[in-house]
Length: 258
Image (cartoon, rainbow, N blue to C red; front, side):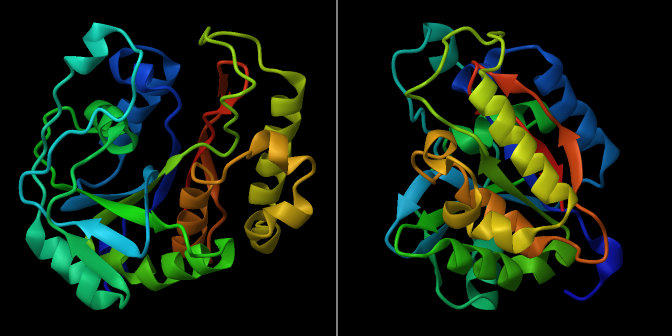
């Protein structure tokens, strides 16, 4: 796992609305083109904003169920089928490499994974696993777990933190192309600046350093996957913004490579 020539940069992807799964827009085009620009991974592990648990788990089914973890959307979205294989072998590899991770052989793949990966790897041949967010961990502990997982990036595994850095569903427009709200623009600009400055500790300690964070991050499950990617980043290189936009007025789609 020290073979850095096999390293695949971990990603944080802003996944936004489930409707992006059936959209054709600049965001979905970015996902498809980026996947073609990097080596094909032997597996993808998604740290999902939509799987909160007591303890940290990784999916371990060879044929994970596709979970439609949303409601009230058009029927077309529920007809989407994306059924990549899983892999018990890599699940067990991750769990044995980092103590404190358990394998869940029953849990499927939610839209934080499939709504992104169907654009990146449309043939659904690359195994997909998910990692949960332990509700008992602090932001610092999530970051440290990312650091412990970092070496696995050198083993041909693509880690994706899937969430949104700014995510407020209480203050939102249902129009995808709604002009960004001024407060969301300011919040996204703050995040951009801290990422460019490599101000990692400020991003971890967002409750103390992020102005008006409760409006940008009223609940933190969409933000926490970012901390894993910051922990896994290549500390020799700068974090790289791959895509930036704000959908629905208040949802930052900012995506980065570590």
